Image (tube, rainbow, N blue to C red; front, top):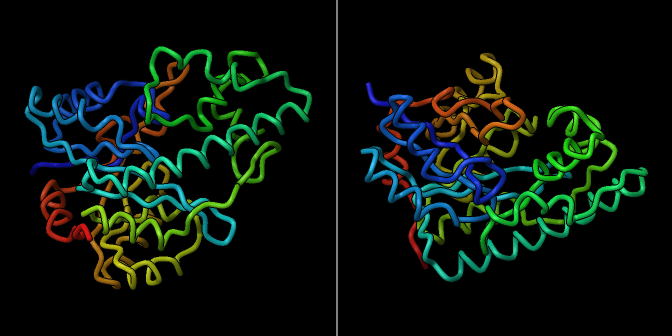
Length: 282
């Protein structure tokens, strides 16, 4: 059986590898398809699509949109989006501006806590790898904290400072998950709720299904087997597709974050089923 990993990140957002590397690793893992789903950007898609031709693997153009519901970060994946749609690109640029403001707010809180960290420190190692349209996120701030010796690992950076409820966590206003679903549909894509087990807000699934959600990422590297079974059943209950993703972000300090490409996989025919249920540009 052929398989797909439908959730991976690259240097275009907070991954550590170029898009072509993700595609190569997917081919080496024996996958038939891989999705590139960077945060609030489609900057890595062209390189990935070219690498797909080189390595003989299908690359699904995707994105992961950051939203907020009831004070909780909620991520919505979009597959088969039109990455040339001017309105969609403008909307993503607005989301990146919010992300940039959040980064500055986090750095300010770190400074209030007595940590000598600046945005220049965060961007120091990114100047040669980032290009226009790429995003900077919390893992990059975590990298700066590790480099400056305030923490020993990315996990400690999140636990102490960056995760929800941690000392420097901030959550500025963002669009709603419903808006993200609508934007993805309007860009010709298929919206899927990412890693719902991390939110504890199952009521979102029927609410989002009403506005066009087509799938749920039941199989994810941070889900327990019980959660995977639970969300697979919820998806079936609401007539939604079931997807799987490693949420691969590359390696930091020799540790893979979250899991290697292919660690979570689903039958590759899901790629065609997502394509069939994508929205239409308006």
